[in-house]
Length: 122
Image (cartoon, rainbow, N blue to C red; front, side, top):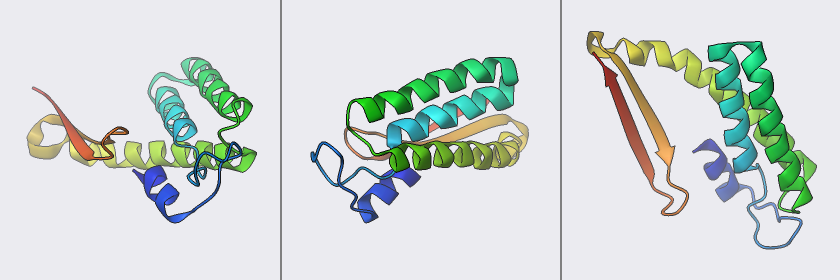
């Protein structure tokens, strides 16, 4: 959501000139958020593998001429920051109503609609 909002307000042209939504890289944002969540949950060994995959996503976005270097660096930083904010906010939400509840906001890339996923463990 954060990356999508930033793209709307920061009109940065892509290297391939397709549009002006280059900054920050949403693909890299999601990849690094996932990698940091894996590292936080399962430790550095699994995190290293997840970060290798996220780095590959970043390199491929540069290689395919969809982003500038600053776009992928900002996307990586934003993803790691969002993972930590989400990790911080997760505990109060998990304890909601005494149940293990997780509420996840999701931005549908096709319809650009914000959706919500809920998981309750009894």
